[in-house]
Amino acid sequence: MLAIPRTSWAAIKLFLKDGTYQLVKSYEVRGDRVRYYSVERSDWEEIPLSLVDFGATKRGQEEEKSAESKELEQARELDKERFERLADTGFEIAPGFHLPKEEGVFAFDGMRVIRMVQSSGEVVTDKKRRALSMALPGPLLKNRALVVLPGAKAAVRISAVQPTFYVQSADGWGARAALIPVKSGKESRVLEKIQSGLGAGKSGELRAALATEREQIAPGLFKLKPAQPLALGEYALAELIQEKLNLDVWDFGIDGAPKAAKPPEVGDRPVPLSEHAPGDVPDQPKPSRAPRPQPLPPGPPPNER
Image 1 (cartoon, rainbow, N blue to C red):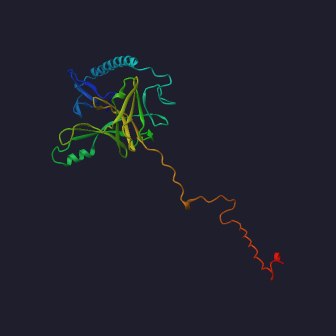
Image 2: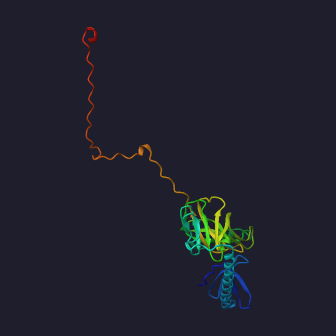
Image 3: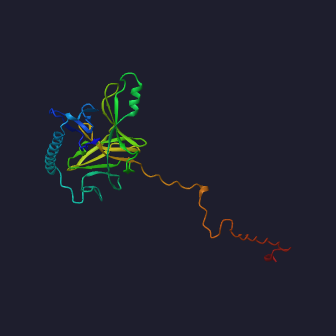
């Protein structure tokens, strides 16, 4: 099986030899067939290899990149008129805290600037839904695919429950960024569901984006903050292009503040240090008794004599 690299954009124009094209998220060659994920129908489809014009597909991608570069250059010129240039040390987000000068996604928890790590999602078939559909008579349920991330937890861990995120990119994709909760499993995490075909339920991409406060604070730099404190768990910052999910995301986990050490119980107090071995403590001298008072001799007191 020959895998074709996926671009960073959500849609690729897969050209056919008759001059038409299909909008796809990804595609791959399997023998004499080309399998692709259709953006319009939100489902996997196949066509004969002989119908695909790979040369035109490649030229189309190059033309789109060229047009994109021109648009980015125009956007930069407009931004220069609206904002001041960033300092050489990087944008200051808080007293004493600066972002790196290079592009990227960063989180700030009040104590440190954290560089986020990008992960690639994968579209897989929901095996549980397929088994359930096969057991039911007729098309009662829609076909379902899942966008999953590898591993039960993200590599980046954040203790603050309401961190601030900074998306620094020349194309300004921070304006399209979404904060998505991720459902964690034993070996993977589910980012969104994609439903298609006949049956009950909504078709298309299903996800639960959280409300965020968004602000552009410099050219190509966007600040995002969750509107509410985040529950402990797994999340991802993702780019949405025309409401379609870019499969390359920046995932992280919220662990909360570390728990304070539990004070020792009364019975668990450590034994004081001693130079003697246990059970070999020398006998302590017993306190001497005070002498008993002696009775006075008979007769009047001495001062009355």
